[in-house]
Image (spheres, rainbow, N blue to C red):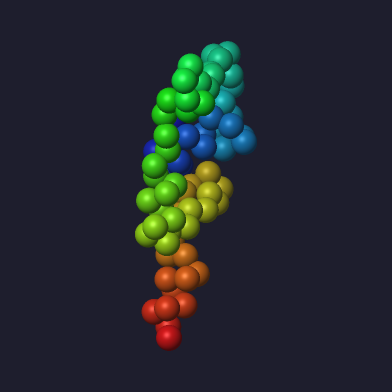
Length: 76
């Protein structure tokens, strides 16, 4: 694993071919509940939107910045 890159992004898209090849033999799956569709909820995206943060992945690195709305309000 390359500590300079986003760990999750190294498993696909060719950012870390050695790790991608090693992990490709393992299967993954989504967890689906019996009563509700999702048994795990990603609350990070909602929090990120509330904070007006944007995430971009550039060359395997996650770059966080303030959204355009926050930037424009600071400049006015």
